[in-house]
Amino acid sequence: MFFDQFNYWIFIVLLMIGLYTVMSRTNLVKKMIGLSMFQTSVFLFYISMGKITGGTAPIVVETAIGAPETVYSNPLPHVLILTAIVVGVATTALGLSLVVRINETFGTINEDEILEMEDDT
Amino acid sequence: MSVFGFHFAALVVVLPLISAAFSALLRGKNLPWALTTIVSALSFYMSIQLLIEVSANGPLSYEMGSWAPPWGIEYLVDPLSGFMLMIISGVSTGVLLFARESIAKEVPEKQLGMFFSAYLLALAGMLGICITGDAFNIFVFLEIMSLSSYVLIAMGAGNDRRALTAAFQYLIIGSVGATFFLIGVGLLYMMTGTLNIADLASRFSEIEDTRPVRAAVGFLIVGIGIKLALFPFHIWMPNAYTYAPSIVTAFFAGTATKVSVYLFIRFIFTIFGIDFSFGVIQLTDILMPLAVLGFLSMSAVAIFQKNLKRMLAYSSVAQLGYIVLGIALANETGLTASIVHIFNHAIVKTGMFLSVGCMFYVIGSPYLKDLNGIGQRMPITTFGFVLGGIGLIGVPLTPGFISKWYLILAALERGTYVSYALVVAIVFSSLLAVIYIWRVVEVAYFREPPEGSTKTEAPLSMLIPTWIFILGSFYFGIETSINVGFAKAAAAFLYGGQ
Image (cartoon, each protein chain N blue to C red):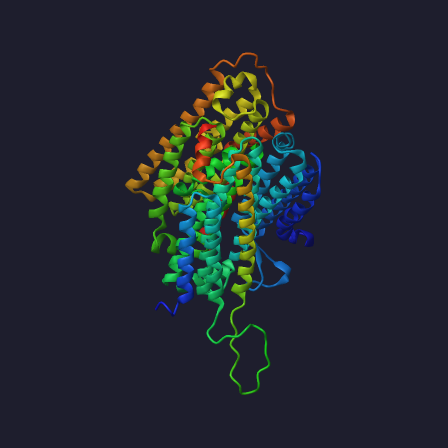
């Protein structure tokens, strides 16, 4: 049961670690690390989905007459996830640049300290 | 439609997307603004042409790069997406007419090129979500819209540094929502082997009883719910709307969450199907309490706000409650009410946020304590705000009344005791709206302006667009054939097209 769907279990574990980090940490950089992990776990999910047992890379090969048909892995989820990786990189870059700006204006990247300052203003 | 007109379906998205790159290269106060306004107006023109075409000849399918669906990406304009395209590009164009003076005051001149670049990307993302017929493509456009909106909100940092933390909070919550959406689409693809919405819809009934599909439905509903600021997930929205630059708030209030409502309707009605959504998994039981709690509690919270923009933001969450209630009622009148309220709320709330933008331009503060006697200091702007407020409350002859009328009809159509309770809740929530609008009226007209204040109006270039929205809202409240007509056609299409 566990080892049959090893990839999917890891996907769920990573997803939950990421989500927990986002929710529990007050340091904004650690929050971004959690968010990246959360997004990365989905990449693993998509890539696992495209794999077919015994399947090869999706490049057309000439098979001899009478030989068994070649089984290909599904390339589409892999292509899709390339797009999602780009989105993930953009999100991380934007998030971290916001953290830099927050550090410049508030002088801290701890969420609790920032909230205290916000109450004052 | 001409041969060129056929390509409007692609151009309406591609034009803002490409222009974003050019806008980033432009410098100065006027050039980026002029480019953005022209592009947005062209998109508006193309949207209207598409909507007319769809109303006359039925849904329009456009094959991107001539790859036939379901292999290629299909752009599909149907009565609902055509209507959404018109709302989004229309609101965007109106807000941009207002933008020139307002944004030059809030954002440094050398950043304006980049600012309008992000604005165009957000516009392209929203239009793309509505027009595309491919589930993964929706995710891509959703992220284009979201990433640029985080940037636009953070641009408010010049006025108030809290814009940065608001943008960061929205980034975290928004990314979680989008990732849930991505997981949901992945699970659906796993079970059906297709990403085309029409294809997904036709294969959905065969696999609807499997566990991955149930999980997918959960992920999609929660993911879109977060983006929509559905009641318990709304926490990012008041902050984001309060600290963003005036025109960004006005633009997003009318469009950003409405796009998510569109996704909600698209998934619930087109892909899952009415029988599955309201028969098998009983979405009504989940959405209706959230919607009612949403509009009651958020209207109450709005009463206690000290910041005018934050008050209107909470009111927006409440209005989204009405829209979701219309969907949850699971009948054609309810869906009509939702779709017509998407339009009505867009025009009323944008008008109100633009009036607040005028006040902010002159006074430099959105706090109620600084707006004492604003009715005498800025009579034209304040009168516009109050008229908008009347539309929000839902007094007859205003668009708010039309939406609530259809919503109450839809509630009564269910004919149970719950429906009477719903009618009471809707009326009670409208009374709460009277209170928070009255608080502004009291500050504006019954308090003395501070010593030494003079009568200064915002420039005409800002007042005229504001009044277009305010007067437009009354036009659509009295002559309802356009908004209600298109909403009815869209609802009938979603119910008939099963």
